[in-house]
Amino acid sequence: MSTETVVIIGSGPAAWTAAIYAARANLNPLVFEGAGSRTMIPGGQLMFTTDVENYPGFPEGVSGIDMMLDFKKQALRFDTRVFTEDIVEVDFSSRPFLLRSSGDREVRAETVILATGANARWLGVPGEERLAQSGGGVSACAVCDGALPAFRNQVLAVVGGGDSAMEEALYLTKFASEVLLIHRRDELRASQIMQERAFASDRMRFLWNTTVEEVLGEDVITGLRLRDTVTGEASEIEVGGMFVAIGHIPNTEFLRGQVDLKENGYVDMPTPWRTDTNVPGVFAAGDVMDDYYRQAVSAAGTGCMAALDAERFLAHNGAAG
Ligand code: NAP
Image (tube, rainbow, N blue to C red; front, side, top):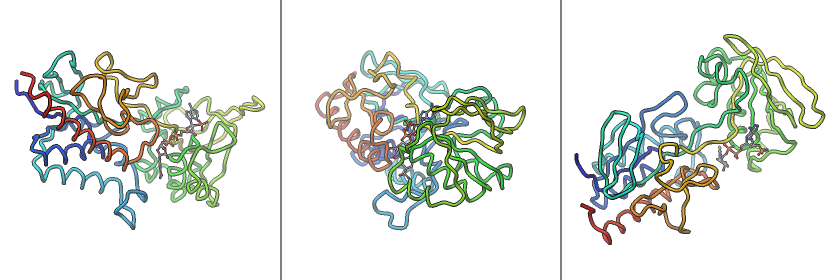
């Protein structure tokens, strides 16, 4: 079995930036970019983002997909090697670390950079999972699914009060007859600029203090059963689609017991301003360790830091064996 110098797990801005820095430092990085699933594809969350307007260097904005393809291209230019597989199991008990992939590949690694990001969170109400899996009109990604013919000229619901919900709702106004923004409080969490855009849309209507209790419909969504969180009153509305935008869950399941995680599942970072985890030689970057900023540019920044931290670790500790 080969022993790699640096293995990077993930394929968002943190992972590719780490790869670019590691490759240019002659560390010959190997990236496991993920196998892809119904809710996540290689490239990460930016693959579901239409316009990135806040990444410096793109005055006109850039599509998230183009951005991630270019990040990857830049990493490949410096001979980064890539497997389109997940890492499903790790053994960090001794160096070199052991990693096993969804393709049943086993590799040893002197250092590992965790950059697996996060996935959409679901409401967990009856009907939601069934209709999401069957493609029956429930989705966690407006940008991926919103333009489908089934959603055209329909009343569409978006659940959530953060920037993602505003972005998804505004995107859907291009196709829907009306977008209902359903939020459990009477105040949005979204940034001021996104709130202003949402309030300015004449195709959006806000249902405040409202939770979704059930998604109605057999094969296809027909409506939602709602609850007013103030009065406790139940009601039903007809909708042709529901988009859930209530935050994310870090992709750290495969790390349980191997590296310290915080209570909310994000990788614990014991040293301020470093990308070290509690395991010497294992570093973390991007959304998998960041439950606060969660921006493409901050993820890329920590990806750079993780590669530099890995390089310095190797310089001080050398190869394990
Ligand atoms: P978020 O800011 O954590 O917001 C999640 C929203 O979902 C909150 O309004 C929350 O309600 C609600 N929520 C959570 N669990 C719920 C549940 N079980 N039932 C009903 N509602 C629930 O997540 P996000 O919107 O995905 O944004 C994450 C980060 O990415 C933020 O830093 C954001 O600024 C950034 N982002 C930026 C952009 C942009 O700038 N264009 C776009 C997307 C995301 P409460 O408010 O009541 O907690």
